[in-house]
Image 1 (cartoon, one colour):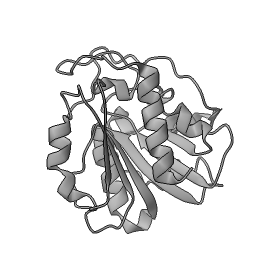
Image 2: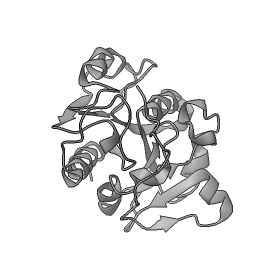
Image 3: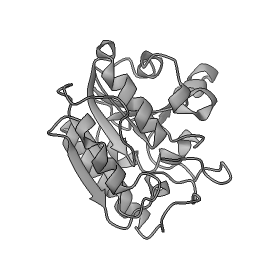
Image 4: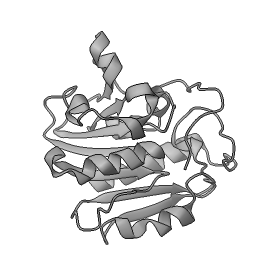
Length: 215
C-alpha cells in the first residue's frame, strides 16, 4: 500500500466551504461543509499527499450536508500521527456524530482511531485501503471502496483483509479507477492506469459515503 506522489504536488481543491483559517486550524486541517449537519467525517490523506488533494473528491459528500474535515497529520504522514481524534473534531464543534476515514495509509490510521472506543466513531470509510487492526466485532458501519486499476492497494489485497472488518461491511469497486484517483495529485509509480473519469470517481465516492452515513 503506497500513497507518496512522485513530486509531492496536489491538484487544485474545488468545492466546499473552507473553515479554520487561523494558523492553528491550518496546521490541523480543513473543514468543508456548505450546509452543515450533525454528521461529520474526519478524513486522513495518504502518506505525504497534500490534504487539499482530496477536496474535490470529497466535495460531493460535503455538499450533501456532511462536515468533512480533511486532516493535516504530523509530517503529512498519518500512520505516525499521535494526536487524539478530537484534534480535528474540534474544528466543527456542532457535529454530534463522527465518522472517520482515509486513503491508503491514511485509512490504516483511521482504522486505529475507530478501534478506540473513547473516540466514539460512528462509521468508517476506507478508500483504496484496509485495516491492520481487528474491527470485526466492533459493530461499526464500514465502507470499503477499491479501484479496479489500483496496483498499490489492489482489490485482492483489500479482500484478503476483509476478515478484519464487520461481516456487514460494504465493499465496492470503482471501474477503471487507479489508486491515485481517490485524490487529485497526479500519478504514482507502481499504480495502474487512470482510465476512470474523475467526475465518475467523485460521484461514486459521494453516493457510497452518503448511503453509509444515511445522508
